[in-house]
Image 1 (spheres, rainbow, N blue to C red):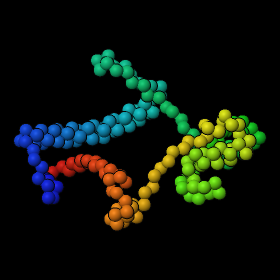
Image 2: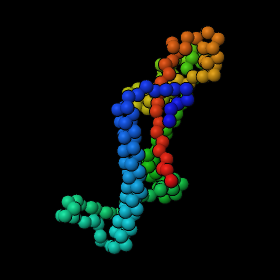
Image 3: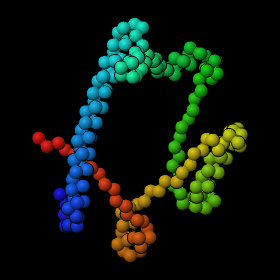
Image 4: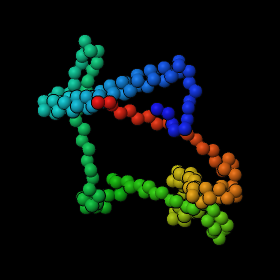
Amino acid sequence: MVAEGKSPAMSVRNMGKFIGTASMYYRRKQNLDKAVRLQSKRETVIKDIAARHDGLRGLKSVIGKFSLSVYPQTAIKWNEGGLKEALGDRYPAIVAEDVEATVTVPLGRETRLGPMPPELAKVALTIGFLAIGFKEHEVPGFIQMKSVERVDEPKLYDMVQAGQVDAEQAGVPSETWAMKFTPLT
């Protein structure tokens, strides 16, 4: 299979290597996918047997040269309202709450201080935290910043077509490759 309108110049040796490697990859991928499914089933069986037999916590295999530990774990999904009611005034001493926020600031937007650069956004957030009582040395730990480009591609393409922007200067296209194998029946 070749991309339409293309005729790759390949030596017989490279073509053979390409076909052989792809075939080996596909066979191994099938085996690995099957192994993952089998492992998942076996994990379930091991856990079920340990759960049904009080005190069974694993094994040591001298022949297989491995040790297996199986043990119960308890996870609790806390009920915030129930916790507040049960703990009353002690709630803040027992439960810590964090706020994770994503703030999207359009860089370049006009402000009273000029166009918004990343540094100004950081300063604004810092001032806000300081204004409500945080210490200056604490604030850098709260603010994780990075600039994310959002390119209006249709508008940029129009500008390139109109000769207003040099396409090579604006960006370099890159190519990625994907593989998909489908079993033949």
